Amino acid sequence: MIITDYCKCVLHRENQKLGFTKVVLSRRDFIFTLAFTVSKWGFSSPLFAATKPFKPIHVVLPPKPKQIHYKEGAKKGGGLLIIGGIHGNEPGAYKAVDILSRIKLKQGKLVLIPRSNFTSILANMRGYNGDMNRKFAFIKKNDPDYPWVSWLKKHILQQKVDAVLSLHDGAGFHLRNKSAWGECIVIDEVAYQGWPLYRIAYWVINQVNRHVFSPLHKFAIYNTHTFSSHTKHAEQRKSLTFFTLTQAHKPAFCLEVSKQLPSLSLKVMYHLSMLKYFFKIYQIETDPPLDMLISHIDEYLVSKPCFTLALRVNDIPVQIYSDKTLTVPAKAELKIEEVKAKEGVFITPQGVNLNWTKFRVYNKLTLEVKYDFQTLAKIKFKVV
Ligand SMILES: [Zn+2]
Image (spheres, rainbow, N blue to C red):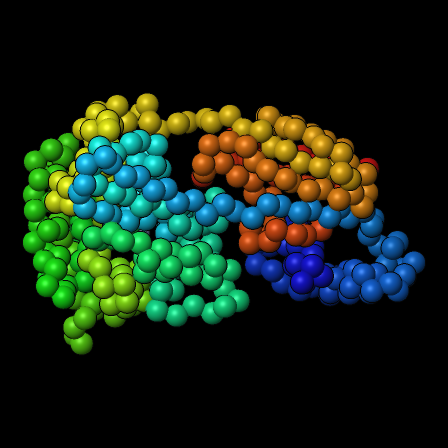
């Protein structure tokens, strides 16, 4: 596995140098890749050694954390499982759930998964490994998303909650364009197993629409009729909400704000506004109240959190707090042990597949310390 990862890494680096966007195995790449493979198995070659400096460092990264929060108020109420970030380029969704994870409850119960697709969030891509929201009917075991989708399914099936909400930032404004996914609540059918999905969504959007900042921002209901044989959205049968309805036998809704809203603050505010009315239906009361969060939203959106990166170079401990350039000896073992910071802060190696936790690189490496989509610092390693 390391050889495969290593070879891809070399090809990626070489192609980046050459300005290619796709990995194309040129003759030179092939020879060099073969050279490494041969060297790895113990056959030395002066010819190969002469064509490329041979100074790999071996890098080990920690696994990405799977974060889940349980909140319960003193007073009995209903329960909701709220999932954010299944699409990694929708920060309004995962920041809203992240804010909820930092407050208390007076009544009811919340199970919160802010960053359900952390690799895609760090890459700021809809799906780094393809669309995760199309993997709930079937996923191959060798899919890099497999551990995450299995983990989500387990919680959807096992958590004792009354409904599941999946938060998104969709494109456009549904009231203007019926095929746009922004500014709406998505339901799979008017009702399912006696749950009045449409009636609940209708009440929520009517309450929220009384307080939107512009008529353009008004919310609508997008019924995908997923169960109908005439649906235009058969692909929704592979989604998280369809899995929740049919396998976990719980009501499910997708809450969508628009990607085209002018600020992250506004996206988070509208998510919290929809949640406020879901919380009224399911008898959940937060402390502080959601109105307070909404009116002070910028104080809850942390812009540049501090971090401590704990690593070992050839077993020697090093701690890093900001931009830094380090020199490391050739063939060094570089082990990133821990990123001490608030949730959402993690490291990504530049030019390396973000699914990998072990790989080798030549001559230099840059690790970006990221807070979700935002770069906090760059740690550069030069091999000497
Ligand atoms: Zn989405």
